[in-house]
Image (cartoon, rainbow, N blue to C red; front, side):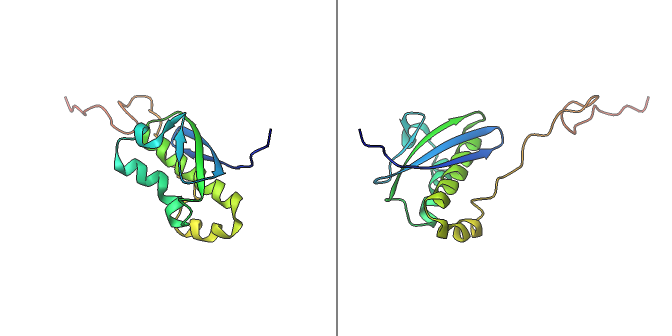
Length: 131
């Protein structure tokens, strides 16, 4: 059996982690065993995932097989995009400046702030009563 080569990238966003494998192919993207069109109904999430492939003009060069866990749909789509961008850099190091220019290699560190003691949420305090 022939060993198929692939390029690997790990993407993270909020609490989602995506493990991405890029194979030579015609542009199919499979997420957790399901085509991404079926898994992501919103166009916004699909565009987020395709952005690194569109920027580098390699949408018809690679098939992506993704395993993603944690977080919600927005976090997962951001993590997948990050993972695809990292895998593309492994495939072709010359794409790194272009992906960096579009901000696709930077890990978006924004996450939910923890709840503080005595507050209702991270920053919302109970209503102040004077008397």
